[in-house]
Every structure is written in structure tokens, then in C-alpha cells.
Length: 205
Image (cartoon, rainbow, N blue to C red):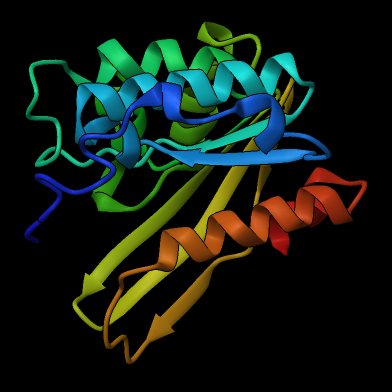
């Protein structure tokens, strides 16, 4: 994967260029990803201003942690920035690597047998994240099993407080290009959290 973000408008953005009170007027939800603060220091500053302003305005904030190692090249590490940003997040979305490399939270002491995904591992992982970030009400983690380039197993789990839910498992075959799978999950989860009373229903949607 090649990222061509150098000298882009977002890489040199001035955080002061945005009137967040005006932007957030009437808004109920704001979504951000870990890709934006990875681009540059000014993009990281913009990301912080966005989530702080959203919280001050009473807007729900969701964040897909989205660790992209090739983007963190401006002298700050992902945990340095993301652990501060995530303090303003209500709904987190991630995979295990995102939690490890963006938040520096892992469950390496939990062993998984025979390469299969162990739900207990993710029950512990989500609990650790919510313990470290008590402002976060909900954390969803995608569980992707790459059996081959064109065949993946797909499921997800969700923790809200003491409640932990595991979705049904899907076998996805004949994959042409995997790009966008995480984004489609995030958008559907956000819809589900707004449309359903039960977190388990939100996750299944």
C-alpha cells in the first residue's frame, strides 16, 4: 500500500480555519478515524480540536482507531496522539492491532490455540480499553480471519459497560478487493446504535 498524502490540503491544514460552533450546530454525531491525525501535526491538532468541540457541544463522537504505520512519520507516535484523542470518544471501533498500536493496549498474556479467534481474548481486550478510557461507552472490535486472499471469516464483538456481545460469524468468499470493509462496518454500526435499543441488535446490523 502506498499513501500519497504529502503536501495534500489535509496535511497542511490550519486547525484555526474551522468554526466548530458553526459546523456542529444541529449535529448529533461526529465520526473521525485514526488516519487523519496520522497525516501531520496540524492534522492531529485539527482532530483534537474537532473532538473537543464536539464533546463541548454535546455531540456523540465515534472513532475508528485505524492504525496505519506508514503514515505516522512526523515525529509523534500513534499512542502519543491517539490516547489523548480517544479521551473524547464515546464509541470506539477497532481491530486488535489498532488497540495495540494506537492505544498501546494488548492481551498478549491470553493465548489463542490453533490460530482460531478466541472470544475470551476479545472480552478481556475490550474490558481493558474501557477501563483505561472510562469516557468511552461502547467499543466494537472486528474479528477478521484471513483464510486466503479471496476468502475471509468475518465477525465482530461489542462491549458496553459490563455487557459483552459476539456477533454471528460470516464466511465471505470470492473477494476481489478488501478495501472499505472496515468503513462499511463502522457506518452500519453507527446506524445500528441509533436505530436499535439493544446493543446486540446494533452489532448484528
